[in-house]
Each structure stands twice: as C-alpha cells, then as structure tokens.
Length: 196
Image (cartoon, rainbow, N blue to C red; front, side):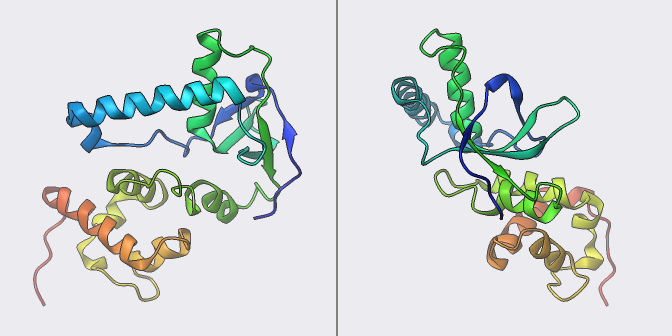
C-alpha cells in the first residue's frame, strides 16, 4: 500500500467506508460478564482518547479521494473514531478536534482497498469467525460460496482460490475454516449435490 504523509482532517469530512463494519462479537453479547468487561474496556479506551487524543503513531487510514458525499472514506480506525465521536457528545473533547490521518494513495485500486480494510486490520482486536464470514460475503456472492460443486477447491477457479486472491493476507487455513463454518450454518440453503 502506498500511503501519504500524516495530516489532520476534521471529523465532518470523514465517514466509514461501507465495508468498514462494526465488529461482531456474538460470544460477548450473549455472556453478561464478558459484555460488562467489554463495556469497562470501552470506558477506559474512551478516557484514554479523551485525555490524549489519537496518537500520531496510530492515525486513521482514509481515502485519498473524496466520495460522492464529498467526504473521505475511513478504512481503518473505526473504534478510535467512534471514541472521538462519543467523547465530543459527552463534552470531553472539542468539536473542532482533528484526528491524525494518513491517506491511501492508490484508493482507486480495489486490491489496495481490500488490503486496507481486511489485510492486517485485525491485529489489535482479532476478527471473530462472524466478522470473517461477513467479510467474505461482502466480496463473494453467497450463491457461489454455497455452491456445492465448488467444494473446497483451492485450485484455479475454486472458491477458496478466489477468496485467497481477494484476501491475500489471510491464511488458507483461516479461509477454509471460515467457509466451512459459513456452509455448515447455511446447510439448509445449500443445493443438494448427488455423489459422484
């Protein structure tokens, strides 16, 4: 990825890319103790952001070009940006706060955008299997993912090879597990295939 120098951009000129979704944490949502711990961590995170802002060493990754709404897409930094928004609402940060940003120079290249959004974007907080399923569903039509004739081919033309080409930073083991969990959860939706 080619990136720009650091700059500061007003929040009113930023919006999340449609593929930059909130993380899905089914396990935490269903466990009251984990949910409470997650909320405590969010409060601490918000307090840290309110006190220090976003560090220049951890800027938001945004698009070089503005979108149809005349705003820059935010590819990485959703949690930090949401924290800033909460802190501004609570009056703990000024409305004029401009977070540090770096721009993705080749933001017209789909491969660069996928790398920016899904490449190593799960370093601090790992993607859950539900997150990974949503990501592959964004990139590959569900009908193709569920097509029994595709099997688990990772040869040229197979769905695994297609996903790996789209998400080269993901290991084949991760892709296989994600596809297996998705297909298992959607077993009733998969067309029946006669054995050979």
